[in-house]
Length: 232
Image (tube, rainbow, N blue to C red):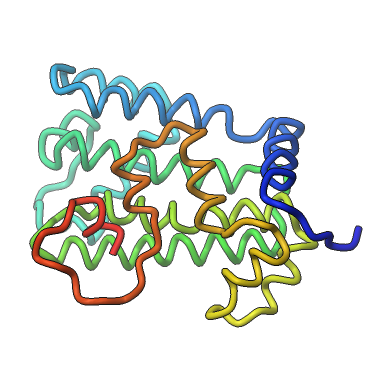
């Protein structure tokens, strides 16, 4: 099927229709809403987040593996349980890490895992790894939040590569500097706004949506929100 030119509303309707048709992402939305609700509840005991992660055995294994990676070598001894990981790194860090893993897992398990989607997922994971390293080396120490925001900034690209392969084949040929303007011509919406719409539908909180917004390279002002700093 040749690529067609879309307007914003038609493309977004087609996207969610295709997602529902293939049955992709319902588990992601459910996991996001539950983990976020626990993270945002200051009165929630750490056992609630522990239970949310442990109930998903593959997720728990990946969280343990990640917190024992070189990124967190400074925390010393080997971490063998989710409860210990939360005690050492905190609920926010483990919550963001779990959301990061669930997002990658959801795209990796979609029914349309093409070569183009694989390339974009690897690109997103590399950006996430770089963002984590930069944040952990800075004063903010918001490594997992930065990693998740970097990953989320690629959501629009991942969705188009997965559900609009003909259009993505055209966009892949465009130099990166002209990608967004070409997207407006082909898709009727920017990749950034497409990703933001998806993140809202899945239930990601506003502080992460703020970090998803692409910022032009510039010196950061002294007064800046956590979301803007992490997004940069």
